[in-house]
Image (cartoon, rainbow, N blue to C red; front, side, top):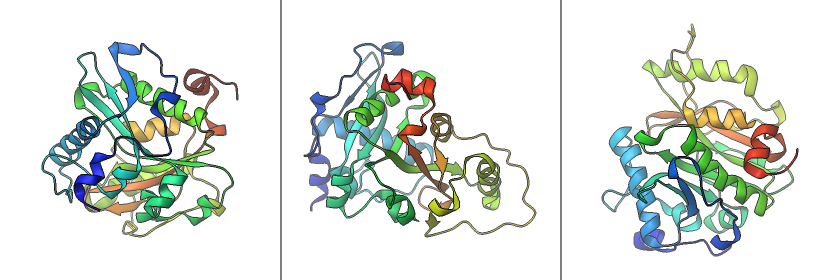
Length: 265
């Protein structure tokens, strides 16, 4: 498959963009919709490159200058948030079970053994490559993005949302270990559902309290009721530690469920 074909398919074949009832108006003139053309996908990939490579200093294995792309983009639906001027200011991508089967697996499986989670009954949905323009990193943008995700969850009767969320490494990986230790006390999945990282963080003795705040994306997951799947995985390309996220949709906090899904739980 050529690299060009990875970004040429506007919508994965098992999805119709017209099926989702997105709201016409959202805060600060933001709007959310699925990419419907190659150009819109490239706009999302351009934002990803700006955030991941230029801002974060990640090592991207891209062959198209200025775009963050990988082989999974061809199989994903790309959800984008635009501002009042039509600029793409936020994005994420969705991989359904059917698309994951065609792709040979989920992205999360490249970092973790998630077999215990995939043994759960129900339909899965993986989100990834989520990023927001620095000028729009606020609650309104995250809420707008989630309104699109939640509509998809409801429309396609998704039971489990999965994905990876990044935390900063800090000096000698200590910050990531400390933050994980703090979060694990409240948000860790039961032992039977624990995932195993393919590249675990080195163990550190004399753990100190984390000086880093919970990253906004991870905080949003946890507020919705997500749990952390186990020990983090080192991502040397992005210079972060990733934790696996599991969010059964029945766990979504009621106030968020009413706002995003318009259903009682």
